[in-house]
Image (cartoon, rainbow, N blue to C red):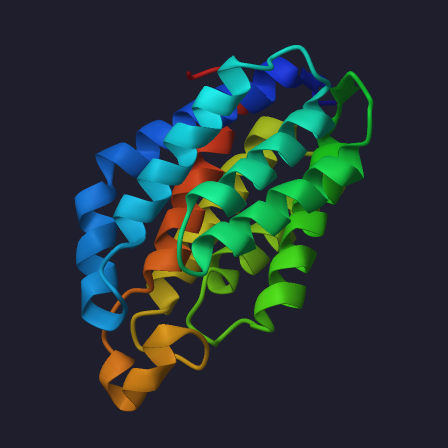
Length: 216
C-alpha cells in the first residue's frame, strides 16, 4: 500500500517557484503559440504573474497552505493581463478555500483543491473539453489523478498520470477549432495550432508533480 504523504505551505511555495521557472523557461514558446491564435503575450503575462506570486509568497511564507493559495490567486489577478490572470487567479483562490486553514493536506485534499480550481475556471470561462482552452489539459488531468488515487496509487504516481493526461490534452488542441477566447475570432484559422493556455496549464501541473515527488 502506498505511503501517504502530507503536504503543507512549503509544498505550495515550492510549487509556485517551480511554476515560475517553467513560465520563464517556456516564455518564448508560449509567446509563439499565442502569436498564432491570440495576442502573443501569454508567455510574457504568465512569467510576470508567477514572478509576482513568488515575490508575494516571500513576503508572507508563514500562512497555512490554503491561505497561501488564496494570496497567489489575488496576486495573479492583479499582475496578469488578459484572460489568464482572472482564470488562474480564481482557480487558485478556489483551491485555497477548499484547503481551508489546515496546516497540512493529503492526496484527497489535493484532488479536491484541484477540482475546485477547475470548477472556478469553468464557471468563469464557460469552457468545456473540446473548446481549445486550458480546460482541455486540466479536465483530463484531474480525471486521471482521481482515477489513480482511487486505484491505490501513491500521490506521486497519480500526479505523473495526471501530467501525462494534461500533455495529451494539450496536444489534442492542435486539430480543434477554438470556440472560446480570442482564438475563437479566427474561426477555422485556429485549427492546426496548439492552445497556449492548455500548454501553460500542463506546465503548471508538471511543476506540481515534480514538487510533490521531491524533484525540486
